[in-house]
Amino acid sequence: MLATLFLTLLGLGGCRTAPRNDAQPDIIKRIVMKKWTIEPNRIEVPQGGEVELVVTTTDVEHGIAIPGLDIREPVQPGKETVIRFKANTAGTYPMSCSILCGTGHKQMTGVIVVTAAVPAASH
Ligand SMILES: [Cu+2]
Image (cartoon, rainbow, N blue to C red):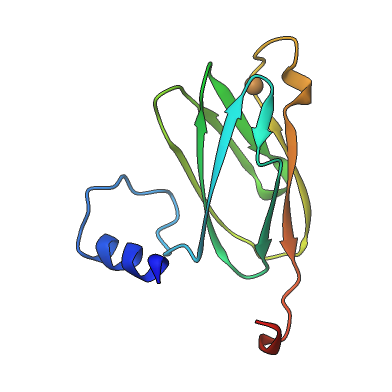
């Protein structure tokens, strides 16, 4: 219901900056980066879904890198980094911070899990 409302509002012509991929997202996930975690550090999305990631930082500049999905974007304080992708292939895609941000930089890791499509009956 909320998603429908959100999409309706978008359809009415909000002045949102357009991400690279203009397909409407099925799934929107927020990611918060900070010294030295990525929260949540595990995100599951269903195969075939149009996914939007909204990434923010609560301290310094970080970067979100998901090499298996060809994603690498800076994440700056006070801004939302909006990334869209289609989850074509099931699997586990490691994500990490791509900008050296201090001693705990290497701890900033997580995974995007694209779960294989299942029969509709299970929904
Ligand atoms: Cu970082």
